[in-house]
Image 1 (cartoon, protein in one colour):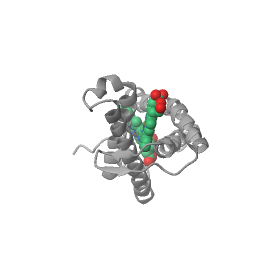
Image 2 (cartoon, rainbow, N blue to C red):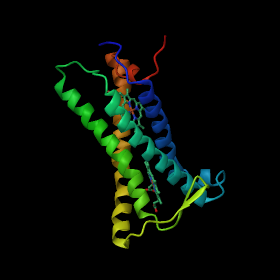
Image 3 (cartoon, rainbow, N blue to C red):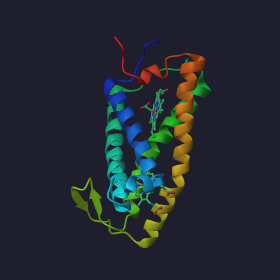
Image 4 (cartoon, protein in one colour):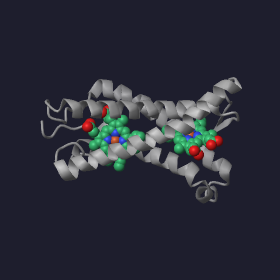
Length: 175
Ligand code: HEM
Ligand code: HEM
């Protein structure tokens, strides 16, 4: 099929999550810049954590929608290796979209001020568990960076070099 596409719900959730993830990453790295806007370093992490939990929620929702709507078959049936690489890349992205916020949630020692609205008390965990979760969070970020770069690079390569339907499948239909 040449005009196969993800469903409108999937497309909305994909781009919303993509923007949120980039903001979530930018916040701690640009904390000096954002602290002025968010009332100090505490505000930067309040937003980082709140958006992170929002991404966790959106990802669970995405996976449910995916079981309902499925995913379009975009690569030629005989491109087995490409299909495998795309599947593995997407599965890892989904895994990190779940594990990054979960690990963040696990290692926090102080109450989490969700969008400055509700306080969530820290989970009653041992320091050892917190340490593992923190190590995961700050290490797995590099895997996430590599995946995002490879993922966006592959999408642009498909669009500009192969000139196929892969990127269009994740863009809203133009009638
Ligand atoms: C999609 C979700 C998330 C992503 C992609 C993400 C990514 C990151 C990145 C890139 C850093 C910077 C690490 C560094 O300075 O080397 C970081 C730090 C941090 N994150 Fe997240 N995060 C997410 C969700 C969360 C959540 C939900 C929480 C807490 C509830 C959280 C808590 C923290 C904390 C406390 C730090 C500072 C760690 C330190 O002391 O250096 N994160 N995160
Ligand atoms: C400029 C940035 C991005 C572009 C151009 C882009 C493009 C695309 C495209 C074209 C697809 C469909 C590929 C296919 O089915 O073969 C896709 C799927 C996907 N993208 Fe992105 N994306 C971007 C950013 C991100 C980010 C930041 C994340 C998460 C951290 C992400 C996570 C995913 C996931 C999990 C899928 C699989 C969807 C599914 O099959 O259920 N994307 N993306």
